[in-house]
Image (cartoon, rainbow, N blue to C red; front, top):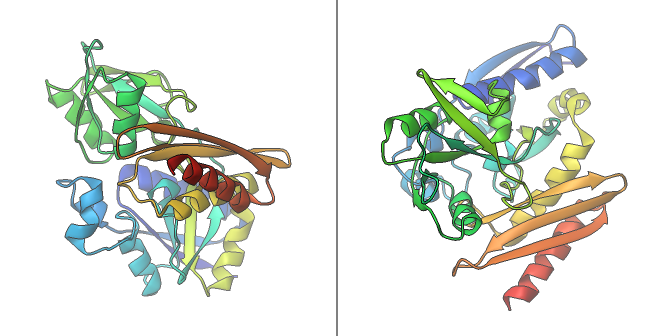
Length: 310
């Protein structure tokens, strides 16, 4: 067994917290293992001046996830032994050079509406850089809101919310807030109290993969995959396989407004999703099948969607 490994991660506070969770799980399974954290700046972190769907074109990362391309480059070059990602940042189609070796137990997967003091809720201005969240919020509020773009890590977006008098609220993942210690319904930043409203995951479906941390290795590195195997959560892995298969069938990236989640229910698997047409029409899908065939459940949902689009 390897006694020392290098772990690649984004350099944001949340990414580092998530990497610490992976390290804690590894050290529990492998006493004496030494883990070196290697923070890496990604295109998505560097180009916060652009909408996410435009970063690939501007940075030449092609169809890669803007938050993972630099990490995979370090992995391919042998500068790190594995890389920690938020699963929702990863494209549905995997690069054959790499393998997703371990999925951590899933956190809460829903979104949170973060309201600042004095927020105008009759017709709020909501900041988000997510195409999915923008479509959902317009649908959720029957058009009674204004959407403006924002980018940055959790703390940056919270500070932007407080500093911009024109903005009333923003949207964040509950999983990230929980991991940063913001577990309640309020949080205090710069002396001001923000209110957190948890949104129903059925009415306001999360990003596919949201709430799950995944560890990626080189495809031929069986030693690293064996080292990671004991920390893999089977339920999280099954749900992820279904959600990623649906993404892959769609050919979806961050410019496609789609959300959903899979849930393991004993030997069964339920998958729910929503897809917004170019005209903004929401199509909701629910499929059930065997947990032993998550890709099959995703395929059924995709075929259902294709039939309803024709």
